[in-house]
Amino acid sequence: MSGITNVAFIGGGGWARHHMRLILQQPQTSRIIAICEPEEAVYAQAAAEFAPFGVLPPPHFTDLDALLNGATDRIDAVFIVTPHARHHEQVKRCLEAGLDVIVEKPMVITAQEAASLIETRDRTERLLVVAFQGSLSPQIREAVRMIHAGSLGQVLNVSGVVWQDWKRHAGS
Image 1: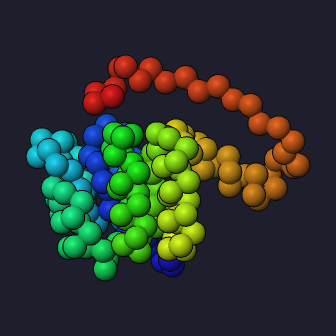
Image 2 (image 1 turned 120 degrees about the horizontal axis):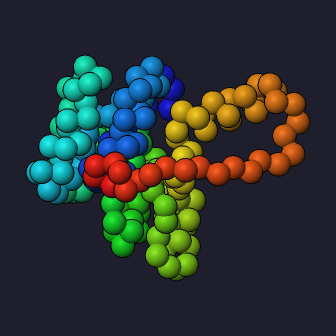
């Protein structure tokens, strides 16, 4: 991938919207071109995230088949933010469709499902990344940039505590 990465979201709930906002803050690197969400009301909530950024919401797909049949030629990567029990099938189908995949943790439920996805990733030669909370946040990205730039010297250990009153946030 080079230039701007075209991302599709599978899932439009609270965590998906969080990741969407982070991507919308970085229009020079990524853009969201599709949202696959079976529930119209959940899609509407996700679509509302785009207005503050002056961007129209992307097309709505109600099922994975429609997304894979209608948009894979424009998608560079999918971000899967759905209930954990659905991850295995969704990740596997996206990898087999030739897409790179970012999946919210946990990747899958069982060790057998994990082995299956690793085999699929190896066979398709696509990227498979598990997103851990905070890894895309501006603060973490800045810390990583500083480490790579050598601004902090040789980093031997990192320890941190993050406090967030997640129950206060709507949709969490």
